[in-house]
Image 1 (tube, helix red, strand yellow):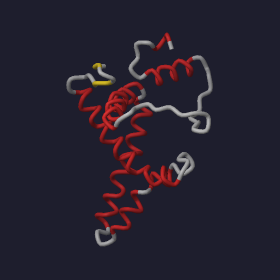
Image 2 (image 1 turned 135 degrees about the horizontal axis):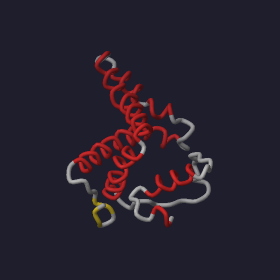
Image 3 (image 1 turned 90 degrees about the horizontal axis):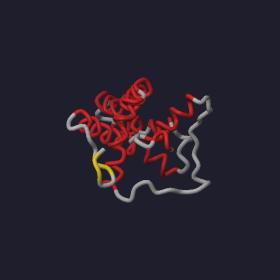
Image 4 (image 1 turned 135 degrees about the vertical axis):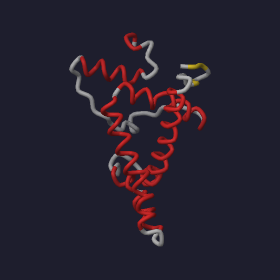
Length: 148
């Protein structure tokens, strides 16, 4: 951790250092190995991800653009367009809104996680937009009682 001590998004910096060292990386679900509580309140969740989201996009513009494009198209506009196309069929919009649950079916471990996926993604989009507002405005996010 010493080489990334000054990084606000240290997990990204560690991953970048590992990649430069030629180490193979793969995202894994490790819930069966242990548990960790990153945040203890909704406000802490908001602040933590607000701090990270826009910085991630700045650090990884190509990956960030793909994430924004995919999440925006598949989770925001697709349900809206489905609703507009068939306003008399609200079930169509709901079905399209469940695309994230289907797209990441194997990633989410439980039925509850799968059904909550669209809401979590929509919420993250709001947090990311707020992170962008902060970064482009005053440029600092409040996190764990300090500004970064």
